[in-house]
Length: 286
Image 1 (cartoon, rainbow, N blue to C red):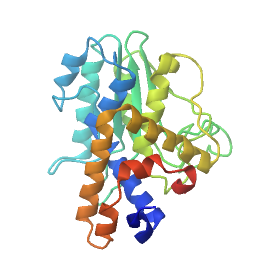
Image 2 (spheres, helix red, strand yellow):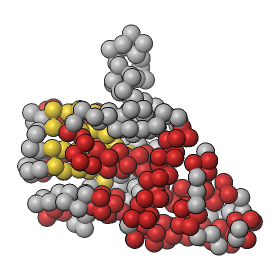
Image 3 (tube, helix red, strand yellow):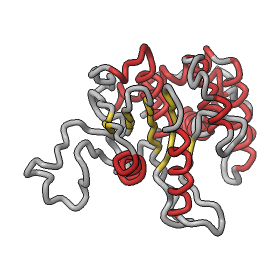
Image 4 (cartoon, rainbow, N blue to C red):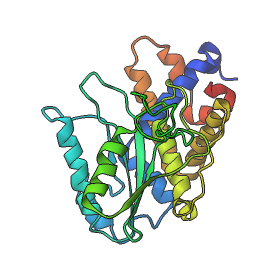
């Protein structure tokens, strides 16, 4: 075992590698690269039009949680609605990601959700990694709850999905809006900060052979350790399958360690995050 791994604990290395993965998998251009690798015809015929919105380099959009200085939440919502006005003028399928929007500068919680807009069938499929299909708002158990606001709500409320995306389509179109069902919620504990990863993983599975068009349920393991194993398998696949991913992970990992003022920098910088990730097991994800 390399000296660097002996001088800094495995859990500490794991936390830094996962933290770095979390950041890169929230990046719009990297999410696009991953989706296009597995679904190369995504947005075929619509790429140029979609690139006119926001970041001109990408067509698979990601709306993050943060509000620009001097702007408001409502202005961020309107930016998303403006995007949707363009989307419904297109043919075929458009996918995008959006996070719950922060309430103020101190609100750092993000909850990524992904969406599939099928303009041909006039349907919108919303993907919430915390979705719990056993929760029925009409059930007496939840009917008067002030915290459970909608059916399917898990540990996080997908505010952006229910209060912006769904409302837009119901008020402005005749599209049918529905949630993509998961066999079990991907996120079940509040310190599970992998919504960037889960939202991307589930979107990938939903697009696979147009699974979203069927009534099939996306398979998510029941136990937390097996959920992490599924996610770890996804990480390893994208590292092995997409050459650029190794470089992105390494650059982010090194940058994060260099910015850290109270960590064993030298030992951590001697770790190859890619090799470490590929050698991880689900036990490391605890």
